[in-house]
Amino acid sequence: MDFIKQPMEIENRSMEIIAPYLSGLQLGEAETKVYSRIIHAAGDVGYASIIRMHPQAIEAAQQALKAGCNIYTDVEMVRTGINKKKLASFGGQVKCLIADDTVAAMAKKIGITRSMAAMRTFGSDMNGAIVAIGNAPTALYEVLRLIREEQVYPAVVIGIPVGFVGAADSKKELENNAIVPYITVAGTKGGSPIAAAAMNAIMYLLDNRR
Image (cartoon, rainbow, N blue to C red; front, top):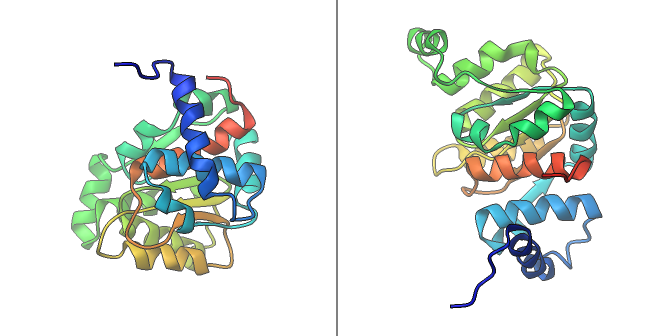
């Protein structure tokens, strides 16, 4: 059986297949590349119509990366999917506290999810940083509360939690926020690979060496 074996050739062919589904969306070059990587990670061209991106999201994320920002995530799957070597080349690290014993104890004590407790623990450390949420709607709700009530202002929030309980509503609230730029996906779709793909796409716009 004959099939494509070279990784870059596979990726390039995938982008060629995706391109027609983006042609009518009036996207800039940078937006097209982020959309394409999200769709590639999902294996679903239906994402083309449900991706939501603030006009300043890519630029805000790039400026934060150039300043050496950290990325704060809700779960290990997002942290694992982000290209940490590339991020380190800009001076940043990926932070995740979902497995931290102190966070688990806090969550149990006050009756919230561990992902909420993790975001609350990060607190003001997220100022000027990038937040990437791919699993827990409760984590996104907590970040939005911190923005609204405690003046914690990340550079951008990549909020793409997945599921049938709270995911669509939390992402809609992110889209409606008037304070922090965002990248999200409408409805129940999403997940850790999608959030990581969006984050990696932005880094590759700055430096596409692998």
